[in-house]
Amino acid sequence: MRRGLLAGGVAGLVAGALLTAWTAPQWLVFLATLALAKGVVVLGLLLLMRTGLVSFGQGLYFGLGAYAAALLGHWGGLEDAALMLLAGTAAAGATAALLGLLLARYRDIFFAMLSLAFSMILYGLLVKSSALGSTDGFNLHAKTFAGVALAAGAERRVALAAGAVAVLSAALLLHRLLASHWGRMSAAVRDNELRVDYLGASVTQVVYVNYVIAGALAGLGGALAALAVGHVDPDTTYWTTSGEFVFIAVLGGTGSVVAPFLSAGVFEALRTLASQYAPNVWQMSLGLAMLAIIMFLPTGLWSLGQWRRSAP
Amino acid sequence: MTSLLPVLFDGVVYASWLFLMASGLTLIYGVMRILNIAHGSLYALGAYAAASLAGAWLAGGYAPVGSYAMLFLAALLVGAVMGPLLERGLLKWMYGRDEVVLLLVTYAAFLILEDVIKLIWGVDSLTLSDPYALPGNFDLGGLPYPYYNLLLIAVAVVTGLALTWSLHRTRQGKLLLAVIHDREISAAMGIDVARVYLVTFTIGAMLAALGGALTAPTIAVSPGIGVEVIVLSFAVVVIGGLGSLGGAALGALLVGIVRSATVWYWPEAELFTIYGVMALVLIVRPKGLFAAPEARKI
Image 1 (cartoon, each protein chain N blue to C red):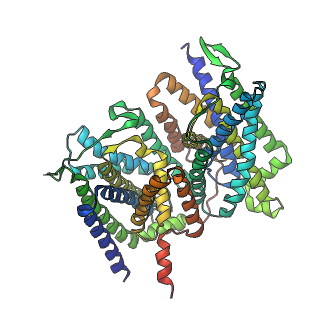
Image 2: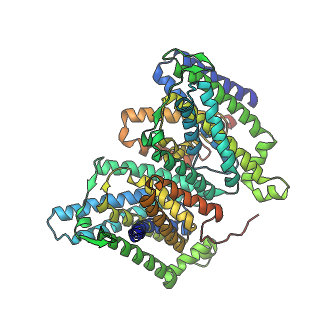
Image 3: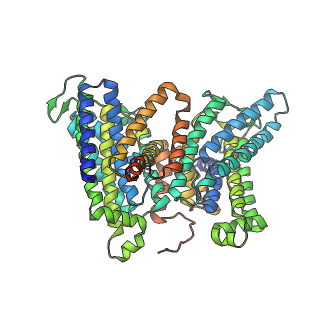
């Protein structure tokens, strides 16, 4: 029953994204792609949170993914959307595989702070590198998708469709992972890692692998966001971007792999509305919403659905 | 190396400012186990309040010397209002939750305060240069330096000494140390932990506001000044070891001198080296330079 429900949910999301990709106006396509991109970053955070870790530096991988995708066209002359998505994921995954060796030893606030430090190092580098446009960043433009030339105006629609398929298959895979032995091990690490240690399992290995997966997912999100916006700048790696991801994660809760996408959608819609009608109190409404959720819905928006289902 | 003296001096000035921010942050963390992101907003509030108060003082035609008193008054006011407001009104309801949840609560408070500041003072920047320019300059290694920098160093040193003295030599300070050491036992021994929390948070808020108030004359006070300050003071506190006052002083000096050295010799790498130092220290000493060892709990 639950499995059918989830498959239905994901299929519905894919269908909705494809429908949006072909028929919706450009602004909605843009919004949906951005929500999808942020959703997949938060999906990685969800895996980390299930392991008991909160990263305040996912902006590092988000920015890496975005810059890797953009540089592929800028320096490599390869302006292919599919390659860009792959490059973003690979660059972020490889960096996470390297930094993870170190970060897997840290927990709690130290994990959060060290990941923050690394994202700020990248920010510092990007801001000062004039070859990459310093604080202004630079533009990117995908002309083909997997070798097929794209008509003008269709790039964003194709990016959304491809992104939706890539991101949501990642979500399904992650769901399988969470339901497996590995997922239970992650939860055990969160609950009490010393006991996991005594049982003979490697805590560091669990944390490391989950960290690399989260990094790669954030890279995919960064590349997708770069394709949607058509521009990259160092703000993608600033700590406020990372904070935004944590916010979306808390908003959605860690109950299901669908939750990050719903909450990213809600977040982007709210942001668009607020910047239209109440630009001066936008951050304040975010903060108040966050406090309300922490106080009254400690397991996120997702728990609303759960609660109704468990009621008689 | 004729410019070594100015490099060191710049570093110490920057470190003084960092220490004012970091000492409040580390004190709050030591007692309450909260890494307070809203510290950056308190800094910004202090800067705005100082610019308004001292600006009004000068516009009123009173003696310019009084504007320095206004800076301190602004910091005290902001701390005395915002400290209890945040602690009693918000954080009190969250104690006992995870450290990361508390981090998010203060992040929410930070977001709210950012807009509150914009609503009160608008988005135009305020300038208050008189207290900075008034005392004139002195010469160091052939370069003119404002005397105001010496004031900043003096305030940081006095603050550090006063905090150390009151922590180790007064009754209240010893109660506070007891709470840092073990909150539950302290409560069981009859220490009013809720009051200690309130006092600590208020003092921390005053220190943040003081950092902002003393910076106000040197910069254009504009929205968003708190954003960068937060991560910088985090870096300092984490380098020194969370909850350690001596660590905060050493971390501030380290970051201050490294920063001024890079600004002088390799300006492109400014931000990079600050966080590079933080990452390096954490790699070698995972809990910072002065962190107390912790027992593993099963």
